[in-house]
Length: 324
Ligand code: GDP
Ligand code: CA
Image 1 (cartoon, rainbow, N blue to C red):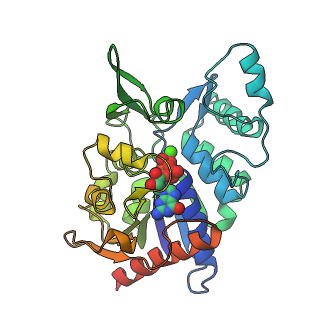
Image 2: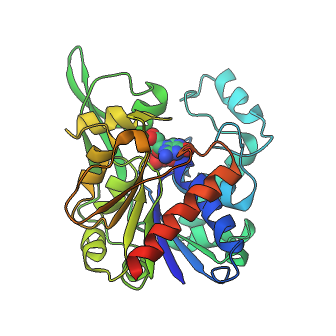
């Protein structure tokens, strides 16, 4: 089976690692190929280096080199270089870049300078992390630079800042007016992205931020149409559990775009292509056009790897059911 997923960072990565576990545990599905389309709107240039946070979180988590407790960054990393930069008064200091993690950003920046595309670079990085051996193909959503910016309200008036500055630097506390996907309207889907959606047997939306992760991928020209047109069922897992965004500030992002911070509100953003939606029983079985809304009778929270695998199995079963 060919499965295609759209993903942001931590939630997406944990879910997809669980999905790989669930597939491997099923002899009928172990040979399945998984294509992951990653959000690159979070990308930012820091200290002259190109950082691609969601791609890196996916690489480290799927490759077994992530900081499990933190969710992002490398395992057992140190912060010697950040300390040196701080001693020189060089910032920003709000974005944590460990020494091992910096190796990834240096390699990416070097290859970009040599003319390699993000697709080629992601494939090289994925090789090191053993993703092809797991039958996982990781694709950036686009090879064109896209950056999500946020228009915030300051005392002196509105100001546009990078999404990471708002999210990490200001912990999404500064009132936001809107998000802008800079470069998104001119961006082309990366090679293989639209085909992976059109030719999939099943498309999955893991629990990722619906606005600044999935929403940005949906903004890449052609992606939304491919989702509407694919013969494969499109199933998603709610990032809102019992009315709460379990981590991150998904609720703040939803409010900014005028959507309800609920399982139903998120599904509404995908209503034109969503066939199945897994929700917490507390979020009620609501009706949403032709989308099958299914209460999941186990924790929707991926508290550990087996819990993520069980959740992924449920999404898989919903998708297989919809194929019949
Ligand atoms: P992203 O890179 O911005 O997409 O960030 P994350 O992947 O870290 O998280 C995005 C959203 O996914 C969070 O704001 C939560 O609402 C949701 N999320 C995170 N962890 C879980 C989980 O274990 N289960 C579910 N259902 N949702 C989660
Ligand atoms: Ca992200």
